[in-house]
Image 1 (cartoon, one colour):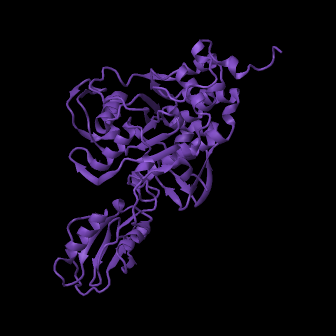
Image 2 (image 1 turned 90 degrees about the horizontal axis):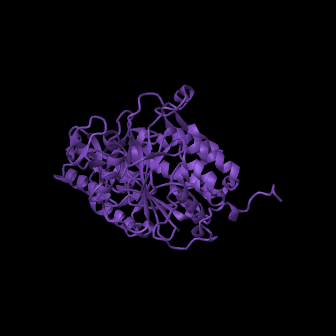
Image 3 (image 1 turned 60 degrees about the vertical axis):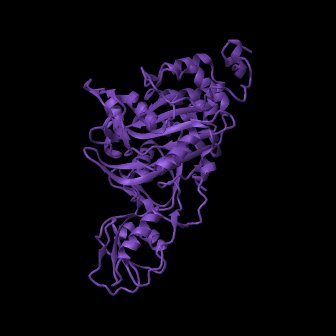
Length: 486
């Protein structure tokens, strides 16, 4: 009958190469990168069942950018496809009510709030997401300042400042020079598109074991299971002061949220309705920028390739950090990548290898907070010469951020090793105590973020510990189904 909705085959474009119902298993240019992109992951699942004319009209809604213009001496292409996904702090379309409710006041920095490399395996069976901390120490390639037009030689910056200085092009250049991974596509998301995406899906469910409260963003979540709508979700992924883990904790939450978003998009059935799909994409794409090579055909191919995708097909990690609080003149405190571990990580991306294959097999004791996030001042509480230096070195070798300048205690008669800490850092204190068997914990309100160890005559050794959440600064990998609600 004329009124019968067209079958999926009728909606496909006419050229012969698009007639097959199932694409080849392997192709030289796999096209499902948006699967792990925060805002566009909701778009692609239904694209295989949507008409080409509808997809073309949606393609016109995407703002275009050319991040690869005149780029030379780029890394050699590897296997699979790499997408640079950036989230900017753009808030031009945020209403005044939303600014007040979700603490979005102040001038935007015109920088990248989130940077991720999304690697799509050549066989279309895996998405690997690598978060690059926004405060990472970086050295820019020579470039022209996007604002002043001035020619710059390479100089140190925090990686998120590359966008303000040279836009998407300098961002891509800086990431490629640091990782030696060739970027194939560029996707840019702002606050507005993020909120619209979550709202149109009906919210995303997340779980947290500890209270999360951040006065800067207004986040205030009790332990448990929560369904977050757009504004609340933005608070969740932006918070850097919710648990004392700063930007590394924020990236962990972003990865957890992305896994939950993928689960919501793939399991809800929302995207199987062509009309609902159209509404979703129109709400989202108006605030997204992408490179010119990502268009209608790519979206159609993505939808076909992702029919059997699930959260377990994705894996998440953070680039390994070698030194936190690395001071750079004119730049400030930065995070310096671990050269050996980061090289191993990016080599795996270039060679299209699963990151989970590189999971560390350590017998270290599990603790709540990674040693790399815990600052420690050591004191020698005995008359034994050199004990303070010995304890400081042993803690540093285990990963703790010691001052490297142990002192002598005013009371050199300490028998049992003592750890004093501010109650706000109680989880860090428990982690440190696990590394010092038999030590005593003592809360000292107002002490601040630095924990103090007074080494006693009972000190024997430092036990190896590692974070129970391997996303906290380690080369740890989790799959999407491992970080969702259970």
